Length: 45
Image (cartoon, rainbow, N blue to C red):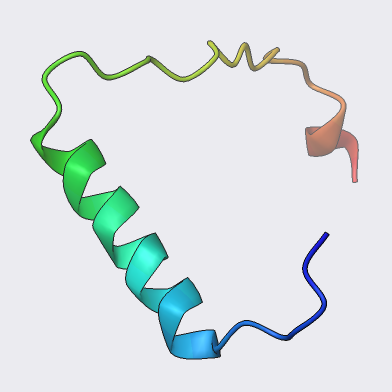
């Protein structure tokens, strides 16, 4: 464990680098499929 605090600009630069590398990646994982059930429950109100 580290005993000193890490600068916030290093954290922001790591996030930017990760997002940039992800955007250039060709093998991106797909999001989980979301199933929306169509019911008439909301139309009653």
